[in-house]
Length: 170
Image (cartoon, rainbow, N blue to C red; front, side, top):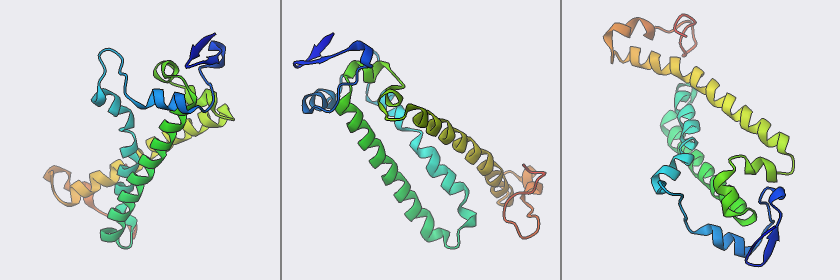
């Protein structure tokens, strides 16, 4: 058993204490591990940008891209940051700093249904991969249509009424 500000917790309980204002206050200020700083830790939030890029890749499907791209991009960025901040503060209010630093799957351990958390993690990873597979040929087609690399111009042809690349380009 260990204690933090008079709160006892069992190490077998995965460092999950439950909500306390003291724990949130202790976890609010930075306390980086040796060799870490703000920028190395900030890299954790970088994956939030991949979903925004997937939206850019599908911009040719929009009726009014000049309006929808800025609105959709800002909505995606603000929604992602809001959810990240809520997630960070909730975990910071219920888990010890040591566990937050060392256990990368603490969210799965403190969730009501850990299996669903892992399933969501795997599905979102798969969706990100599929978005990249869907977006890469479209980007290549746009590069070819704009003749950025003239040797690739033959990849810029459209097939039928579909705006996306043909099967041979994928």
